[in-house]
Length: 345
Image 1 (cartoon, rainbow, N blue to C red):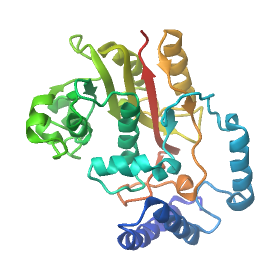
Image 2: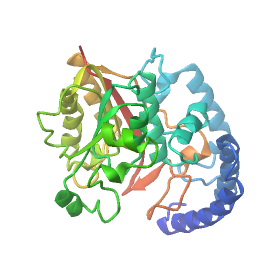
Image 3: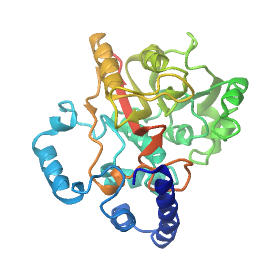
Image 4: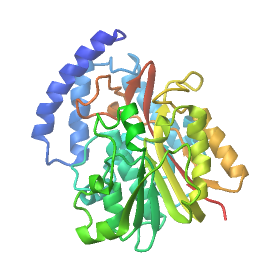
């Protein structure tokens, strides 16, 4: 199925079938829904699931998984002695089965679905939670927050949050306002997760260009962004932001950012434009640089998963619903990847 038109037809058929399936399984557990989605994918594509060869589906799948259990380095995963669930890792379906995934979806008042944006929110939130950041008195800052619900959620934990986004004129020029992905003030971020009094007291909003962080934004306990750093204009600026943003933190503060990750290339990528794409080499370069300066970067885990849902690549136009863990951007297969840094002391 190499013809994009054939892919589009197959995705349309899958989308229609999946709507019926999602209606039937609206209240089912994610593990049950994964099994049904995989059956649907297998019936739709047979052994021709995008990303798989004819022989992959059975024997190589078993061999690959066995090799992963005995030799994680085969999947370019750094040695991990971290006690945390989430290190620096890409989106894959394994995480959707963890009890914590349902827990945070309940806190966000969302039904768990196989969408990578939802995974990003759970990833960022649990990574902050297990590092002791979500508690009364913590000060956090979100960059490029758009209309995401995380600001409201963190306020419900008693955190003081500064929400930032591009100024209205810049955002309009990039199309964020037209697509309802821009916050003009903090009221756009109120979802009823924190009570109104706490939200108004704890949340503030300020326009900020991520390429020019004001010098008076300092002494925060944590900072984060959800798929924002790829929209700063150039890959070099994106990587520079990850370093520069540590200036807003106290020593020992936590910085977490998710961004686009190219699965099928460590050479070619998109380096300039509205959306730039990170490769494994880019994450390694940034990690090496930050570690050399005394910061702790959580181990990089590039394993992309072994379920059919992990192999399915969604095609534009997007918005058909789940599964949407992988997508095609130009000629690149991409997913979300999270990078976690603790500022050196």
